[in-house]
Length: 243
Ligand SMILES: Nc1ncnc2c1ncn2[C@@H]1O[C@H](COP(=O)(O)OP(=O)(O)OP(=O)(O)O)[C@@H](O)[C@H]1O
Ligand SMILES: [Mg+2]
Image (cartoon, rainbow, N blue to C red; front, top):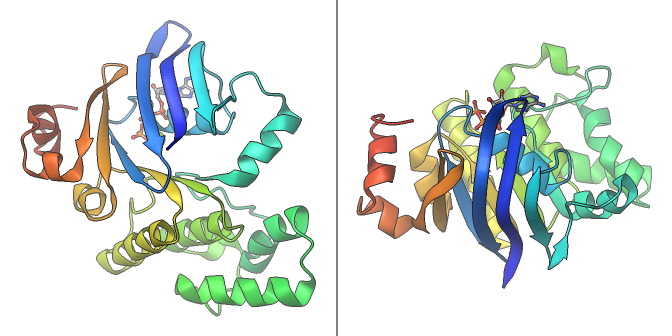
C-alpha cells in the first residue's frame, strides 16, 4: 500500500525553478532514501509533505487524501502522524532538553507529568543523552542537539518520520546509533523518508533509494539495484562525479 504519493510536484522560488515534475510513492513500512546534491530541493520536498511549504503545481497524497489544499487546522492532524526531523534540530533555545521533549507530550497528549518524565527518561537513554535534562540547547554540541531533535520528533511515536540528514556532522559512533534507531523504527512498522548524503547509512537502512536531480526523480530503485551499481547515475553521484 502506498502511504505517500507525490504527483507532478512543481516548485520555484522567484525565477529559480527547483522542482519541475517530481513523482514518487512511499509504501507503508518502507524507508525510502532520498539523495541528491545540495540545493536540489530535498528539504523543500520534505517540508511540503507536512504542509510547511506548498507546491506551485501537483498533488501530494497522504493516506489517499490530497494535503496540498488543507488549512492549518487540518494540517495539525497530518503533522501528528508525520514527524519531520529538521536538518538543524530546531530546538527551542529558551527551554531545557527536558522541556523540549516534554513540549509535544504536554501539547498533544493527556499524559500526566510522571508518565511524561518516564518517557523522557527512556528516550534520553536511548539516544545516550541521560544527564542532560537541565541543559539548554546552546550548551550542547551540534551532534547532541541533533539527537535531542530526533528524540523529540519520535517521542510522539509518529506513523511516518521524515529524516533530514540525521547523521550529518555526527561521529561514527553516533551515526551508528542513529542508524540503529532508524532501523528500530522500521522494525516497528513505521514508514520513513531518509534524506542523506551518507551512502553507507542509506544502503544500511533504506529499502529503496530515489535520486533527485534536475528538478525530478532521475532514478529510483531497490537498494540492491543501487548497490550493484547497475544504475549509472547513482554510481556517478556516489563517486562525486555529478551533483
Ligand atoms: N523559502 C525559500 N525562499 C527562497 N528560496 C528557497 C526557500 N526555500 C528553499 N529555497 C531554495 O530552494 C532550493 C532548494 O532548497 P533545499 O533546502 O530544499 O535544498 P536541499 O536539497 O535540502 O539542500 P541541502 O542538501 O544543502 O540541504 C535552494 O536553492 C534554496 O535556496
Ligand atoms: Mg536540505
